[in-house]
Image (cartoon, rainbow, N blue to C red; front, side, top):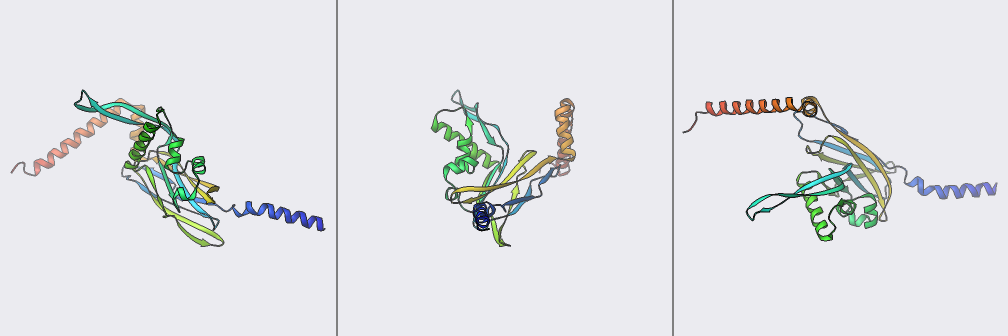
Length: 254
């Protein structure tokens, strides 16, 4: 009996650390966004529960892909024109990081890179055709600024709300969803962080889907481009005619 009791004690002691980190979960409300004719962005609320003694990082990202920036320069010393492309691979089209504290205070550089958390980790993860370190860093910085300007990259520090509940830590954040985000599937990942390491993660999905007239027109552009072109020209002519009528009714010049 003493031997059995000793074995049970060893098992409890061994499994306790695993059990301590088994409650992490996440849910994204409004996880199916429909892009219709009147769509101009949305809001997604993210909530869940974790162990009470951990910090949290929430990453919202699309799948990695290949993107390009237009490089402008003077042609003939006079005109500013597109003179080339900067292509970068293995980066998401949408990327948001929300955290309870600054990433550099939560994670070691190696740990952040392992989960691609934060801009330095994202730049280390990216693949581009530039070998010069300074040029690579400069262009990746420009790429990130371009994405931030388009509301597709960003995040926050300290805006994840937390409160104790039933021996857990409940968390919540309400984040705007940019209308610039393309239709597709997006992954929301919450990381539980302790002692500068990710000790657990959980995921949820957000799907953005075209609907109604927007979906019909998008399908027409792919399958019947000639008809789509004629329709676009017709709509533009009607819009111009309508604007002309409005100004004509306004009484012309004074």
